[in-house]
Length: 184
Image (cartoon, rainbow, N blue to C red; front, side, top):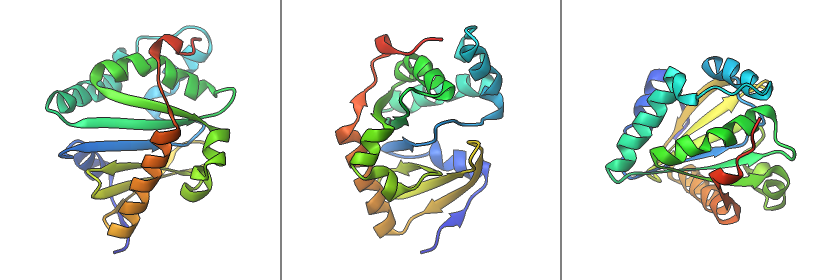
């Protein structure tokens, strides 16, 4: 079964309609999300803004809260550089909001992810969402952190590989502690 390119509408439809669990592996050193660009820049300049003021993030927190209150789980492992990039520091700073919404977040350093073979296996310009251990949405990025495509994969062998990568990342990751969040 070949991967199927999906648009943003189908991406979010699939992401918010899983039945049991969703897991994201984040590998990019930076993300170029147009709505978040100014917020990350302000944070890096020492003038952080409440992330719930961004409509897209507020919607994200509300949807995650709704899903987790209905008994579904959302987890992610973030691979971060040492020292973290501005984008990664900002992600860590908003962790308390993700956690309050019901997400569980683990961290791996880039060197740890390399040592356990995760980065070589997954690839540099790829993140993914694993949905219900039945489907994977592979997100491809350019060198500047812009998402350039979303591919839906349902091939059982490739889904099983994503499950193994998830298990490896979670097993070696450290649970995020919002008290240790990196500030501006």
